[in-house]
Image (tube, rainbow, N blue to C red; front, side, top):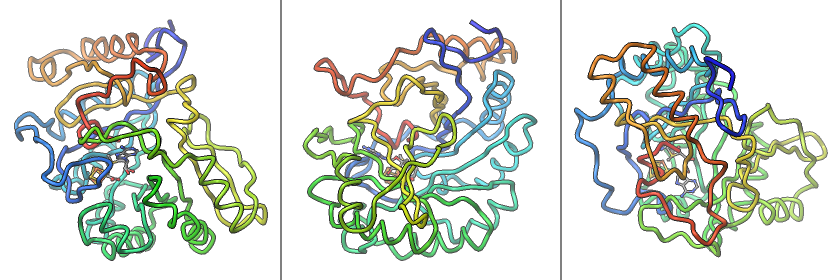
Length: 331
Ligand code: SAM
Ligand code: SF4
């Protein structure tokens, strides 16, 4: 194993870290949270901004180059631009991004950009406000659309739109999103529904596969052709053959990409997860608060990656759904 790098037993080097800054959220997406919400970590168990900064700085020393802030809903964490400022100042971190549901983006886009954020993914599963309300159990569609517009005005680029596709629920959204991608120039990325929902109601039959979404887009619009995706991106990226409109697919269930996985996660309460579907976590909050050195922290990170398994087991009969939901892991 190359020293000083986060390389696992299968030779995968980890250069991307997703940091969940809160487990709280202002939506209740059916595929993620139950209507009443999930039990939340007590506030004192959430890492402070300085603790996040320290873990990221040590991770960057071990080769991490890209950090994405997520949640829960990251924009409900108070003063998030301040965390962005602290992370943007870390030497060697080349890419700092955010995944948000966009509800609070209109208010915060300028401050986030000023703090050093450069790009954002906005989750929007439906262009039809009624379908959006049904899926998220909240009436916030207009605010998300305004948030996307504000992010554009603030200079955040690229803006990508994350769409979770559910069979029986969002088929009618696929073609409108194809038009949306062509009209706005924003990349639309279709994500397969994964077994990380709070209700454990995931069923394979509810996964609207990347192949089916692609077929629907091609039947209604134009053929898609692959474009080179940045190395390590989980999305297979396409454009329509006339060069107008970019579409990405994240086929976690039907075509896992574990062999090239280069990411790991830090939860808001300070646990490292080497895989979305991990059943085990490594605590960093305890060591941080016990006063470990940077070298010792680096060892904790390296050991967590070294113990990473070869891939998720969603397609195996022995699959066990993690007890944490996507909102508590940081998707
Ligand atoms: N709240 C923010 C948001 O929704 O963008 C950030 C956190 S959310 C957990 C991150 C991403 O995970 C979102 O794009 C969301 O749609 C996706 N997600 C949540 N639950 C999922 C599931 N069961 N399967 C697939 N994607 C899921
Ligand atoms: Fe909240 Fe994002 Fe989960 Fe929806 S997907 S409930 S916005 S954390």
